[in-house]
Length: 141
Image 1 (cartoon, rainbow, N blue to C red):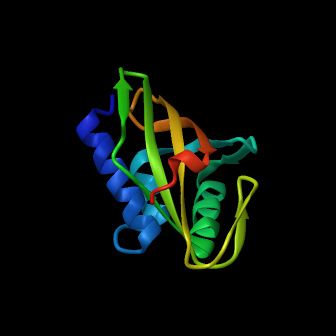
Image 2: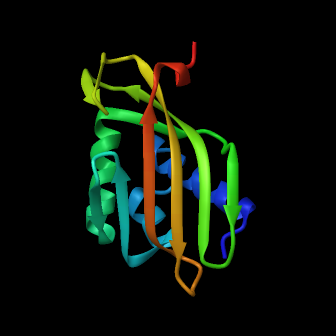
């Protein structure tokens, strides 16, 4: 089981890896994920299976934008599952399109994320499904 306090540490580790101020993406994966874990990103239904694919995905995102998961709005967990909702802020390092919206270098945008985690008997993440939604209403002014 991952408690809410541990989940906050998970988010802190992820944000540090994305910012380059903490552990690496590979170290983050080893700490929190089973070796063959699956990371699924919705709406594109893209799946990253295992460490190499997940770390490659996170690294590729970090090359084009700075991702920061904000404190969660909702959190629920039991021995096998975590469900959470939180805003995610992105600072664009270059001009790009993300979830169907064009963004200029130096601008930022916010997505609302809902994530569902399946945990192994060892308490590590074995499957995560992340739903990210863009809406103008979520943007920080």
